[in-house]
Amino acid sequence: MGAPAGPAASQDPVRATLVEILRQLNQADAKHEGAKIEQALELTEIQDRLSDFWGVTKGQVKIQLAVGLLLRNGLVAVQAPGEYSWQRQRTAGHRYAITAEGKKFLVGAIQTTDRIS
Image 1 (cartoon, rainbow, N blue to C red):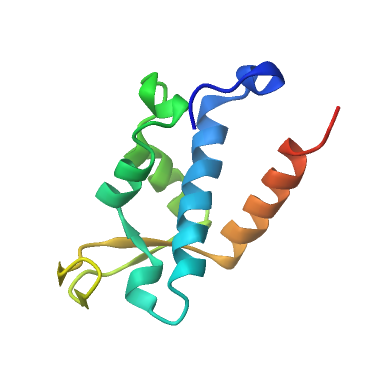
Image 2 (cartoon, one colour):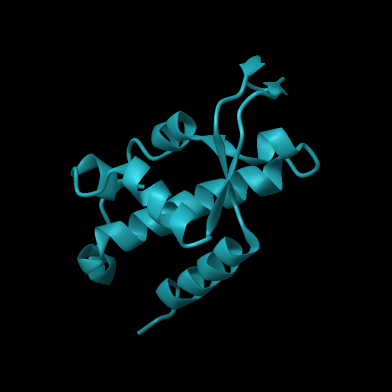
């Protein structure tokens, strides 16, 4: 997840970070299928997962603002706190989960970036 090389080096850091957040949320969704509380990540968990992502390490993108943008555009949904999480061994705070629209956007973004020019 370090700095991109080649054509990706000129990639927009905001867009790349938005896509990476959606990837992480999609991964959590797929990994914990059937356990709704575990299918979403808290902001601190997203920040931990992206701590070495190039757009974040260079200080170009603030994760909380990126999550807010995804939320406002309907690509991410927020789940209220209060449920006990066995995985976290505590009551979970606000959690963010990828929506169906977020998955569509992620698939399109992956298909676009994976094309050979």
